[in-house]
Image 1 (cartoon, one colour):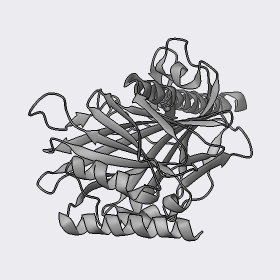
Image 2: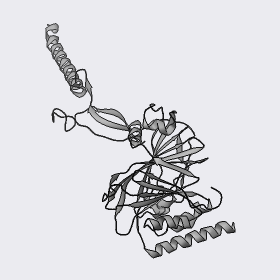
Image 3: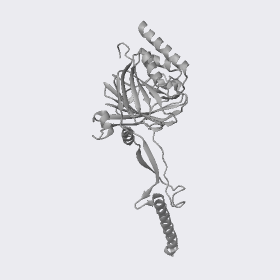
Image 4: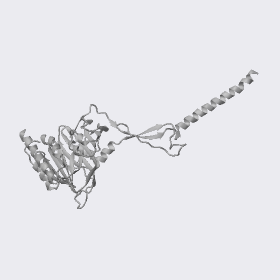
Length: 363
């Protein structure tokens, strides 16, 4: 216990010293890591999309960032509970997932004509509404790979000197406050995946959607690191695709708004689909979760996702409003009104004929 406390104090001292040397403001605190750049550059993450696959023993996280700004390079740090492997992901994976979880299109009919319907107009009206829906001694750098525009270093969480050396050699400092946020990971002996984003083409800035990274590590529970997002200065949004044997849900809101499930259902990926390589071709239950964090500083912990009580399927619906018609496009209101008028006319004529016939009968 004393040794662990000493390691943490050493790590905190080193990180605080780094902050005092050349202060660098974080460009963005990502959903499961901290992204930093040098003090002269600007980098913003417009969108962060993640897919998580868990089979009960191994967890895989595929992450894709859409960034803008003028930074020629940046660094991103993600804590992981055990030794990780890193490789490039398939950019088509998220298009595949977006298609699988697309809202169901439904038509909602209305009876009486509206502003764009005949006789008010010759057009039609469309409206949309969504339905509710590591143990061991510190070893420093344990792996280093060049993956596309990413320089990936895998570091131990208990060796502050390794983290310091990696950041210093690449000209980056840790954002203020990160040292204290690392403490739970250090105490649990987590490790880091440290990524340097540096375009291979000279002079090219980091902009647009970056190639996704696929991170794999052993885990007996499904966890999505979120604690470092406490450093974010603006509201955060999490979009997460969860692939497992059953429908999954966050154990709690961890300081954000209530998580919303936007899709839940069993899917069987095609053998040549990007999703098949992530699930080893096996059918899985796909749960799509969205959550907002209006005050990131209120985040209390990492997300742990657990099995839902039931594998209840769910899909959002997008409604198109349409005028109710009968047969070959005849408005129902027109047919109904015409029928009522015809019936009323027939009744009136019958009544008048009966009245005319009464005097003749009396004579």
